[in-house]
Amino acid sequence: MPSVRRASPLDAFVIAQHRSPDLKAGDPALMVYVDWVVGALARDVYVGFLAVEDDAVVAGAGLTLLEWGPTRHDPSPLVARLVNVYTAPTFRRRGLARDLTSRALDEAGRRGIRSISLATTPEARALYETLGFRAYAAEMRLRLEPPGA
Ligand SMILES: CC(C)(COP(=O)(O)OP(=O)(O)OC[C@H]1O[C@@H](n2cnc3c(N)ncnc32)[C@H](O)[C@@H]1OP(=O)(O)O)[C@@H](O)C(=O)NCCC(=O)NCCS
Image (tube, rainbow, N blue to C red; front, side, top):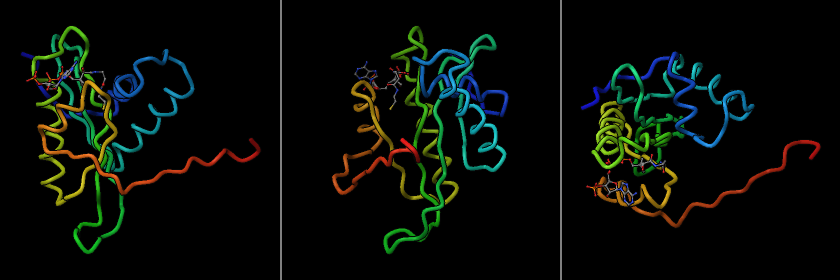
């Protein structure tokens, strides 16, 4: 069974690959995320959990912490986004994503965070539902074009 450890800046590239498994090394969209993870770990606004076997990372899950501000239902200034949940294909259906995600949720709880959101894929939906996540219809999103586009 793989062991679990916390992510360090040296793991930034593998974390970015978990986020975007389809992007090749050197792709600017991948590399900008690598750089962000390094800084975010140092600022303690990213927390990562990695499963490791034979010195290779085989699964991961992370939390991005956002200073959202307290609400009437939640006095904590922070909320979290569960991100970068990924298990290497040959390690799937062994409970790794469930274990790593549960550790991330425990960590959020230890920090006093009470609101955690995520975007799901079809294959991960059942996992998140069994951990208590529910679809939330109140959100809306707008994507602005970059300046000059
Ligand atoms: C989704 C993913 C992270 C699951 O990883 P995993 O380590 O195999 O997950 P677990 O073994 O912990 O499974 C937990 C539960 O998730 C659900 N699940 C996992 N894979 C599934 C699949 N392919 N189809 C349907 N449900 C699935 C099951 O409910 C499973 O529980 P069970 O095995 O007791 O039935 C993995 O398939 C993956 O990396 N997929 C590509 C990236 C991705 O979609 N990431 C999620 C981003 S939101």
